[in-house]
Image (cartoon, rainbow, N blue to C red; front, side, top):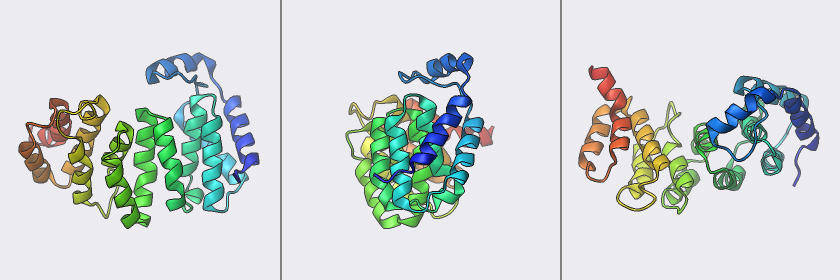
Length: 238
């Protein structure tokens, strides 16, 4: 690996200096995390990451992903994993997001199986990769939608929720349909919730489409999914 070790050392030292032990326990309990917290709020953590990234430049995609993975794998506290993902938010580093990153993204989704990691990756990383490499990413997401992992399925469903342009409705439903029905995966809370969230985001642009989908698949959709999917539509009609 060709990780930027100086960046990692500086970033972890800065995170340690911002530690707030009085906040850490409540944060860990809220997240139901076995990994302890440092107690750092997200805005302060992201400020630290941005400052360190500016001081220790990364100049190519491979170095970026090696740096992110080393941080992720070696983390002893949850904010250190968040910081790994925060690096992928830094504007000067986002330009290096490409298909080389996909195996690392896959690893982090599987080794960090919880909603906080999943939502960050699906909302901040996957949309960029989709726009830059649509053919390859659409094929990958359709495969994830049929995975044995509920977290890969959830990430696939939610991968377009932050797109302002280039939304692919066919891809959305291709990522949702494999998780309908009575299988154990279909009954997973975070699948049902994620499905509803993805449909709700689509409803802002295409409310009739989402209503029609919910009507057509009513027998296979959970009440939670339907409630989430139609929430914005019902709010506007009140």
